[in-house]
Image (tube, rainbow, N blue to C red; front, side):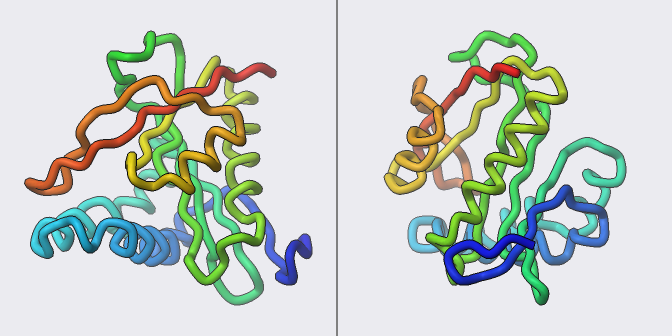
Length: 179
């Protein structure tokens, strides 16, 4: 474990046994970010579908996604998810992988956890031979956009992201990867 900014935590690749904790961090973080702008029934359906612990466990078990968790002695503090997905039209389809999620529990912001998770995910993407990676981030999440820009991503466009019937504009960001 590494002590950073007054807490001790470790980052490792997740296993299927981490699915419940990933689900809790993911659904809590997502609801906090979007809860005020999404209809409650849309939010409930989205959280159930996207953060289902069984689905997360199956993604991990069958290598459909790669998850990393940051954890202290008691709990998962955050996670990152990499997955090969359909590349947006704004990007050439050249062996890219998507950083689907990078979430840190709000009680642990500012402690370097997001940076360590991003670094672990980037290392895995490079080691796996991907030439680039991309992500979506809500256009009004200026802090996250600055974070990703600081770490080498550039905004390449935007598109709507549907949460139920609510369309939210997201920035598409990309970074070329070099080994």
